[in-house]
Image: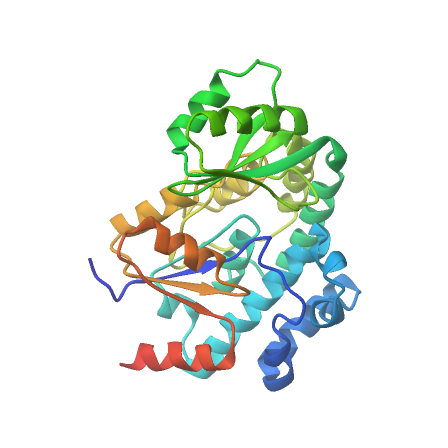
Length: 318
C-alpha cells in the first residue's frame, strides 16, 4: 500500500455543532469569503445560526446540510490558499457521507459553491417534507453483521418499510423507515445477537424509500446544474465505486436519497486503490472513528482548526 495516497472525506448530518468554523471565520479571509457567499446565496445569515445557534434550529436538515458543507469548504479552501496547491493536486481521492458527497464534489470544483449551497438547501427541504417525521424513525444497530441484518429485513412482511440507510462499518448499521417496522426489525436484531440499538435524533427517515418525493425533487434540481468531471477519484455512496461520468454522478446523487450509504464498502475500495491516509475535512471526527473501526491500517486524521490545517500542510511538505 502506498501510504502517501490521501483520501479526503467529508462528514454528513450528525456532525453539526454550534460555533463550528467560527474561529476560521474570525481569523482567515478565505473562510469569511466562503461563509459570506453561502449567506448571500441563501439570502439568509446561515453563518449567524452556525456560530450562535440555537442547536435545535441548526440541526433542522435544511440548515444542517448547507452549514456542514460551508465549514468543510472553508477548510478545504484555506488548505489550498496556504499550501498553494489545489485539492486535486493534494488528494488521490475524495468522498463524502450523504450530504458530504456534495462537499466532496465542491472541494474539487466539480460543483460551484453557489450551486452546492442551493442544492443542499433544496435537498434538506425536500427530505424534511417527504413524510411526516412522527411516522418514521432511524435506529443504529450495533454489534450485528450487515449480512445478518439484510436477512432479517428480507424475512419481514412485504409491506414493511424498514431499510438499511447506512452501512457505516463492521458492527454499525443504521436502519430507516416507518416506526413500527423499524422497531420490529431492531427487536429481532437484539434477539439475534445485536449488542445495542440506539434511536437517532433526526428530523426525517433518510436513505430509504420514504424519501422518494425528495429524490424526484433532486432530479429536477440537478438537471439545472452544471457538473464538471472530477479531476481525481470520486467514490460515490450509491455503489462505493469511482465515478467519472457526469451523468452517472448526477444519477447516483438522485438515487442516493433513497438508497443506502455504502460507507464500509467505500473504505474497502479505498484500501484496494492503495489509499493510506484518510483525512476528514469538517466538523467533528465521526468519519475518522468509522475509519479506525474498519481496521484497514489507514493513517487517520481530521481537520477542523487552523492548527490542524497547518499540521496537515507541514505533512505534505515532508
